[in-house]
Amino acid sequence: CKHDGSLDNGFEIVSHPLTLRAHKVQDYSYMLQSLKQAGCRSHDVDTCGLHVHVSRSFFSQSELVKLGLFVYFNKSRLETFARRTESSYAKFKPVPKHDLQSAGYSENRYEAINFENRSTIEFRLFKGTLNFETFIATLEFCDAVSRFVKTVSACLIAKDGGFDLFKTFLKKDGNRKLYKNLLTYLESKGL
Image 1 (cartoon, rainbow, N blue to C red):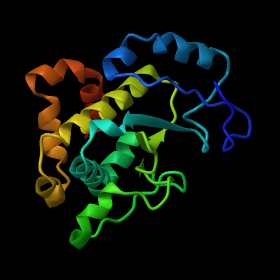
Image 2 (cartoon, rainbow, N blue to C red):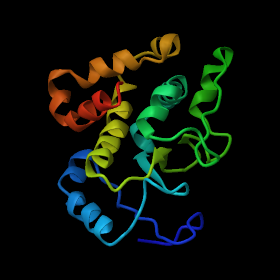
Image 3 (spheres, rainbow, N blue to C red):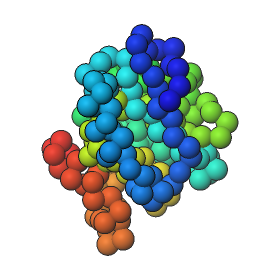
Image 4 (cartoon, rainbow, N blue to C red):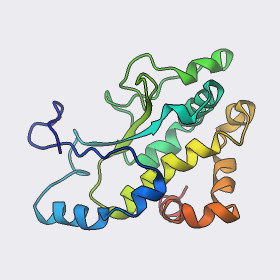
């Protein structure tokens, strides 16, 4: 737990860098339930977001562009998934079709996906939550989309956002079990 200047009365919870599999063995369900019982709030305040960092070294530069394209070309779907619309903390920048490379860079850190950190890529678009199912689905999403962009071309993402291809990726044999919470959550949101 640490201080966060954007919060009037609260704290920020920061995890150590972990893989999705390592996150899944943590007792987050108990922690989140304890926070609820203590009267903490997350999802019902305007200043609380859920930010997920992924190692920059996992991506090539072209994969960073594809990651940005996926996020920015799926704005309405991701706003539904993230449970909040664009804000000053997480802007969805327009990516012109004539400059797809710009999707892999940040103009400032307050974008839906922040590319400015030296060691990590930061997903900033999610509303905070104390709901375990939402929390774990968010972690699964970040892992899944990071792996998905390694399997698809930028042209396919730029064509229509690639969301249907992403769902197909999630349903592959090895992925269905790993991303089961994400699949359930996407269905609950009509995605």
